[in-house]
Image (cartoon, rainbow, N blue to C red; front, side, top):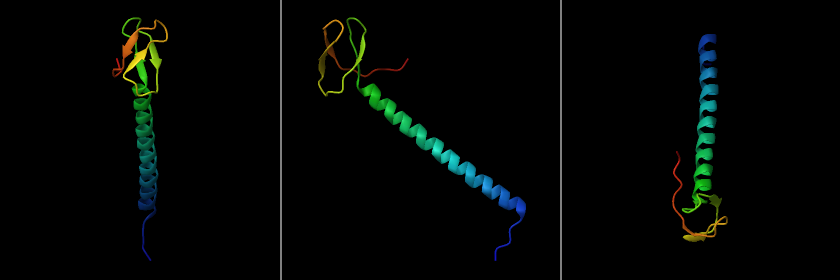
Length: 79
């Protein structure tokens, strides 16, 4: 049988719990970042009226729903 002191057992238990919580936190952050990148990929900003709209099609040129101008799809940069 393996002999282990109570102090070592408590430290081991805390290390396992904190490691598991850290892994869960990292996984949720990665998932949130991926979801935000997908959402940003679908946003389009009109060059005429600065209206931001969402379009999930793969077309390169789109019509703005507000002013009707032909808008080219570009990446939306975070400020």
